[in-house]
Length: 208
Image (cartoon, rainbow, N blue to C red; front, side):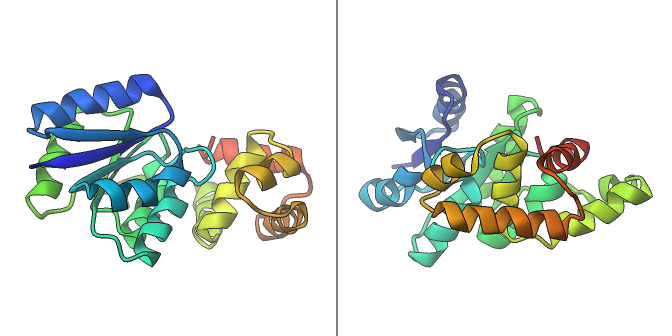
């Protein structure tokens, strides 16, 4: 029996994805609203497909995929997110995802991606032309972003959204000192001098 797990913190999105999965013949569909639940639910329900958002409470989608890989869990992963594919698609591919669909696309793209993944194929957008179309200064900044670790990128996004260090630390199960170290490291790697400039950098590159 075809089974799936939807992981997204927005109930409306989960409901829409559920309808798509039902149309694709899935009979058992489970839901989670944060990244902390996923590994346990995969072990419990053994879904054939995981439809995963990247922006999640506790553990984000990249961290979830790394934990799935570390625990050697067998599940086909389809990323369905609002995050810019130019900066995230390759990371998701390396983390084990078989498909990446931006939420800005029509739902038929999600149908196509599900069909491809369940048939043993992958489903990723061609990004070569998008990267080549960047202005020189943004192309240089993309190279900086590409050199960040998954955790550094996750913390960059949260800092850019205005979250306090102690809130990020609590959400990610890190110490306040660790987050502060990441912040200092990010500012050095991205050549910015303040939290305001960090936010501007993230907005300019469509990370928030």
